[in-house]
Length: 514
Image (spheres, one colour):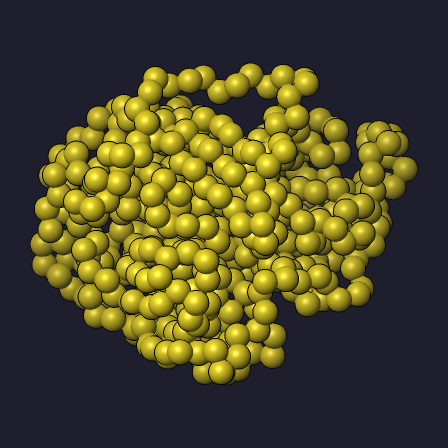
């Protein structure tokens, strides 16, 4: 399927929409971080000490409004193995953290300041037009239409676009993120390091044991470039799952994270990589997972491994029982048929509780929540009586001569077609979907707009049916989810968050009709 270079990604209707909504205007420099501006928080160590991992800089909403300019441009960064030209928001790895509240109105002016595309006649479900982009609010329950969370838009080099996103008053609190989502270029742009955390205030923030703890925002990314040229202008560079990847934490390679003996910290994790899973261990320290994909668990769960697929987020309480040096590790494992090596993500240094390297006024949490954790109130169990339809969605891959590597990924036997409605449902209904994976690879399936309640994995009913927006469907296995289509009609997508799989066809359209 051929597309005109200037056309929106998905047809004439969307083209008319963007023509009405796009605001082409000159680029504006980011607002300087002023001492008296409550919206802006610089990157800094939460302990206030040199050498400690910094939280990314933040932009906050104030009085119900969030407003910023976000410029995407190519910026040079020195990676552990190459001096690289990376496609980034504001030239930063990661982009700034957005911190907002339920009910906020968000206005983001996205400026594409990347050079012109080299290819001008792209083919759907192949890598193409790496310098055209858009913006997705991953996990947000907001409108998919117009200039809200509309991934059918295309912002070309030299263009700007105003996004206006209205969060509902009862929007679930937790961890979310933002990243590019233009079909054909999303994998290259996210693999370049483009993305950032979004935090909706509330719920877990109000738990006393969480509120008293130091908070760390930790964004895991692995920018991939050709080590010779330092560029990412060929899909061949990222195609193999085991391509050279050096994992960064908040843009730092194997950073140090400091704690005090007996201290408990709250870590917000985001896997913002393009395709590798992250099973994470931290031997010698105590890990308690308290939430996933932004939503609280029922109770704090002690564990020795936390598993986050591409696109997933996790809330972790970390306790340091004794002085020492510990390692945050992604152990060696097999992702489908591909063996991946052990990776040291960071080093955790636990200092004596009375250390003079940390100011005495820096707060220090010491408790793990023991009582039941609060719910995001609107996420109540979906009952059998609510289900209006059950359907199966089959994940597949086919040999297709003439496509990239002669490969196309499919859902229900078909590669992505922007003009086709694959699933049609009515606003106010609920459905149950069973994802059946016929491939030897796990696939993290992400559904836009409406969160999913996960009920079964490989046919086994889960004792605790958690809410997620990205579910890892096991290789040659299955996952069953339920979701309500509430508040927002319109078209959106569902896809694999191993992003080369999405670019090569593993995506479909959902149309919710009012």
